[in-house]
Image (tube, rainbow, N blue to C red; front, side, top):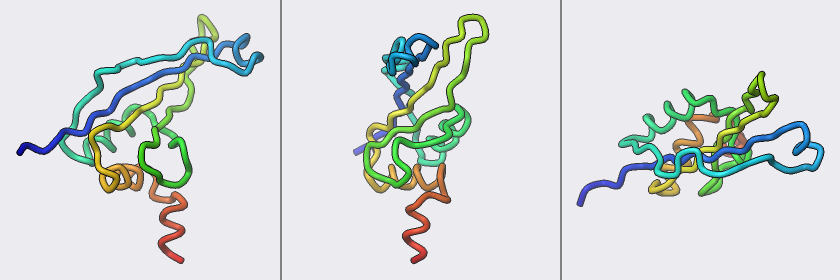
Length: 114
C-alpha cells in the first residue's frame, strides 16, 4: 500500500484598521484548500520555513495545531494578511517531528531536558 502524502492547506485572515477596532477579521477563508502535497517531513518543514512561518497555534506541541506567518501589510490598502498552514495526512509522530524542526527551542525540548 502506498504511503499517504502529507498535505498542507493554507487559510488566511485579513485585518484592517476598522476590523481591528472591532476585534475581528475583515475577511478569512481558504487561500489554498486543495493544498500542497509532500513526501517527507523535511519537505514540509522547508515549505513552511520558506512561507515565513513564525509561530504555531500553541507554544507546546499538540496534534492538529497549525502554523502562522507574521502579517504582511499591503501598503496601498493598509490591510494586513496572515497565512495559516494546516497539516493533513500526517501521524501524530510526523506532526511532532515537523513542529520540532520548526521550533527546536519550544517547551517540548525544555521538558525533555528535565
